[in-house]
Length: 294
Image (cartoon, rainbow, N blue to C red; front, top):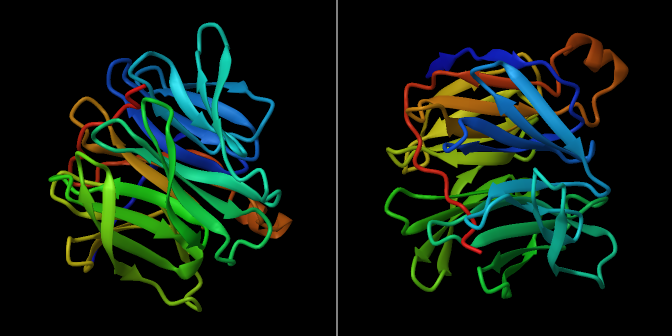
C-alpha cells in the first residue's frame, strides 16, 4: 500500500482540531477546535492562521450561501458572520439529553446540513442521532441509536451517503435520494477491529469515489476504493489525525486536522505537533465544497 508523508503547514495546540472545509472563493481553509471553542481560517498563500473564540464548543463549520458560515455548537445550529461577529441561533436539539452534544457535520449537494450527535461522556453508547437541517430551518431526525456520529460524505454521483459511527468502528453506506434527501439500505462500507487500536473519525470523498478516512489512534488517513479496499495511506507524525478535506486551487491538496485531547504528558512530549494542521499531495483530487443553502 502506498504511503504518503504530509507536512505541517500550521503549528498549533488545538485540543480537538476538526472539520476542515475549503472556501474556494477566498482560497482559505476553515476548521474548528472543538474543546478550544475556536473557529479558524488558514491562509495557505500567506501561511497564516487566524481564529476567533466562541462562548460554546464549536463542533463543525460550513460555508453558507447567504454569507458567513453555519456552525454546530454543543446543542445548537447557528449562523455566524466573520465581519460582525454576529451569532444567530437557528435550531436546537436534544434538550432532554443533557449529556449529548453535536459532533461532526457536512452539507449535501442540495445545501442541506447533516449533523450528528454523541454522548459526550459515554462515547461508546448508542445515544446519538443523525439529523438533516434544510434551508427552511426544518430539522428532521434521520437515524437514532447512533454511536458517536462522525464523518459524512457523498459519492461523486450523489447516490451514496457515507456516515461514520466512530465507536461501532465502522463507516456505513446508504442509498441517497438527492431530491428528497432520504436515505435507505444501510450497509457496512468499512469495519475496523474494535481491538485494533484505532477508530474512524472524519472523512472526505475524492473525485474518483474513494473515501479517505481519518483513523484516530494510529495517526493515519486511509484511502478506500468504492468497494472498501485500502489503497494508500497518509502517515502522520501524531496519533490523533481527526479529519481531512481537499483544498487548493485544483482541489489536489489534502488538509488534515489533529488533536491533543486524552494524550498523556508523556505522549504530548513525544508528539509536539499534536493539534497542528497538516497537508499533503494525495495523488487525487476532491470535488467541490457544498454550502448550506439557507
